[in-house]
Amino acid sequence: MARNRIDQTPFELEILDLSHDGRGVARRGGSEGQPGKAVFVAGALPGERVMAKQTAKSRHFDEAATVEVLQASPDRVPARCPHFGVCGGCVLQHLDEQKQILAKQQVLLDNLQRIGHVQPKTVLPPLSDAAWGYRRKGRLSVRRVEKKDKTLVGFREADPRFVADLSVCYTVVPEIGEKLGAISALVDGLDARNDIPQIEFIVGDATAEFGGVALVFRHLQPLGDRDRDALIAFAREHAFAMFLQPGGVDSVRPLWPASPQLAFRLDEWNIEFGFRPLDFIQVNAGLNRKMIALALNLLDAGPEDRILDLFCGLGNFTLPLGRVAREAVGVEGETGLVARARENAQRNGMTNVQFYAADLAQDLAGHAWMRGGFDKLLLDPPRSGADAVLKQLPLKGLKRIVYVSCHPGSLARDAGYLVNERGWTLKAAGAMDMFPHTAHVESIAVFEPPTK
Image (cartoon, rainbow, N blue to C red; front, side, top):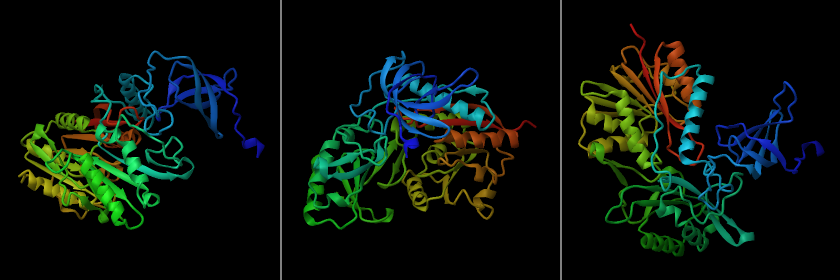
């Protein structure tokens, strides 16, 4: 109806702040004593004056996109990527790299105060690494577009109904990011091009057989010999490992080479991690090494400590902890990851590390590892956080907790529980730029127990 129609007439706005998802925040239509309706403006930065066009509206706020920057922020920089503003993978390329992590730090601090009603005694210096070519794991969407007579391979657009027509991606490792056009042409030449919805990529260390890059082609119908031969030829040409996935996660099988070995090393701790192509590994290899070192330092792990690592995955923190502590115990809900973590402990000759499978959102009273007694605790939960397990753990006796978070809201909620209900102190917290140029906020916090 007419009342729902969006007025496309551009209008001028003063940008006041930056939202948690990387959009400028403005107010429109206010009067004396009334701030006006909030408008979230894509492509705008705090301190700017822009012409914007409304893209969506709701009762409590409107959405808009920048049409023209009338007065630019001194922090504005030219976006490197030609697809910026269309592809939904990045939202902050127009903001200076150093200011991006400061903005994320502020999102963390705002969440801690607003949601958890806590503030850290110390704000840690932001942790960052290379801002380009860092992404070693991801999922590329695939869509055949008959009107363009082309198969698109890339990330979703800002409007997730569409796949961005990408020629390059500078945040993905160059081995993949600079070959999106070649991958698109490969898929377009397949008989099954309409039956391939996605391609996963993951990157480990190069081996004698291939260059460390693995692609997993999800296909909804069996592939014919011509398609299989084309995929093998592409894999050989680019030194990729090629996998096929006709069904669920357990259906993944190598196409070429026959038995590719995926692994990466953490030389600082003399550890090698083996993994499978759909396993979770931290996206940013350089930042991951710095994050592990920081976590171990904040935990103050020593040779007398028995340390519990929850949501441990492949043992990303557990195995390095095992190099410095008396004993490390990792717990993870996904049984496949637990199996690989145990294999990694064996691969690295570590007998002081144990791994257990448990759903950490459920009742844990029957698990023997819960009764073992620990000196320190490390958590790296999913976006939903760790409130369920924190409320079950016997926290008394723990000397320190380090919490690694991929969602500042759930960290803030859990920090509020530890501080306001259990008497712990939030000693320090800070942001880590695991995903430069995106609005994703990775963070870390360290807690100390109540004083006696």
